[in-house]
Image (cartoon, rainbow, N blue to C red; front, side, top):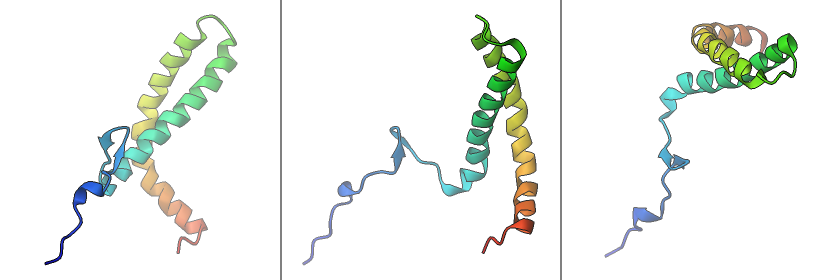
Length: 94
């Protein structure tokens, strides 16, 4: 009689203690994180360019960041399929 190895040795696929999402959610998760990072950087630069290093900079920047993220995330969800096709027209993706 052969004994199989217990599955308890297999570490669960987690990130910070939470299970990872299935691959099918990548089409939502990738634009989510991309929109957060891009809107953070662009709104920070734009806010600094507009008001400079004032004492209310953080408050102004966070307000601008939230508004820009609220626009950026749905925009990415809409335009990303087109951008993928456009990229495929210029890049050999094989």
